[in-house]
Length: 353
Image (cartoon, rainbow, N blue to C red; front, side, top):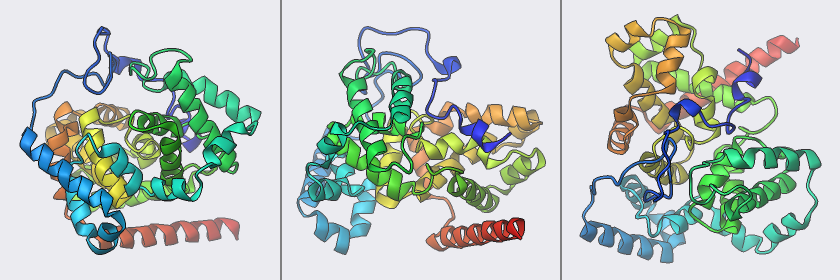
């Protein structure tokens, strides 16, 4: 299967097999009326007094942000891993990803970008995708409603700011996810930071960076779950076949909402390696037992397992617990990054000679 075919539907139509048949009249606590992300009120795992203490700690950090990030980053990382309180999460994300710095540096640029005409092809593609982003969420449930209009504005502004990329379909769910938490101008600058810094090169033509990171994921899997790695090699299940959407959409179309929020708390603090860790946990959880691997005795069967991992594996506590316990160091990530970059450079040189 070509890479182009595998990314064609990323950020596009929702998987109708995973959409709930019923739509409620009352949204859940995240704003969903139905669909794959709809969930009943979860059990409270943190006491109100603990939440209040965490909120106060985060407010103190945000009021002294530069000092904390420069002198006490490990404390920021520790608190992100515990989970950012919902009340301060939008501001924390804006600060963590550098969106606030960009906004301060370019206070009027978002509005100026919206005044530009934009590339007609990009504008058409964006409009086609608006109704596909979280259609059961209260913000986007109305066709051409306020949420869809803001989503169009954010994606248009990015396409004008970065005409080399223009509009990439996988940016739509990321932008929509951000808009659920913050005003459009803040969501825009967060999208700029995520697209250009965190996922740098992912949205460029050819997707070479994505292919390289797929190889890195595969190599890291050999260290963390060798039996799963051997199974994927045996059945020729390449990373591009299962991990493309995970990385391009930063897991916004993969994880349950509570899990996604916790992973993003870490992702915006620690960077793209968090997507690798989450992916490694999902792979090991979905294909970790010999019984499952025996049943998934082919490429298509294996992909089916990876497209629908057990709910328990995607759960917030399971995911965060196992991500923090992966036996991987910063040096491991750096080594594989350099090795796979050098390997691809050598391949390019051989093909060009």
